[in-house]
Image 1 (cartoon, rainbow, N blue to C red):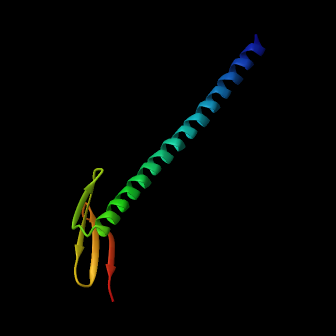
Image 2: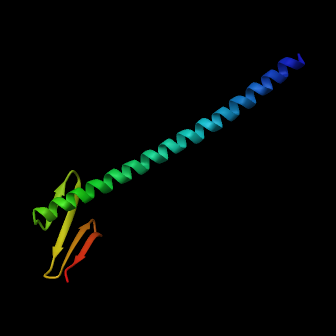
Image 3: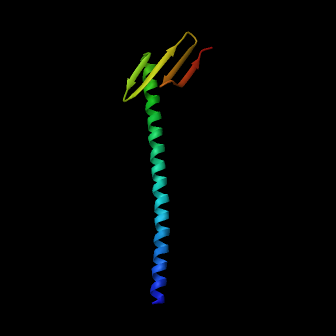
Length: 91
């Protein structure tokens, strides 16, 4: 009876350790996916900004991304939702 109790206890400890490892592993996978989504969104914003600059448009909306381009004689600024993406000054 004592041996069966120890086997049960060892099994429960192993199951607990396994569940902790799996939880940590899945947490890291979720964090990596969130980071990947953030990077893909930033890439999309930069692509739309590049298109707006190449086509000389002051505003461009594409795939849910809207960028605005402000040009002066000496500078070009690109914004997305009020956040400055690019600021280039001519010499």
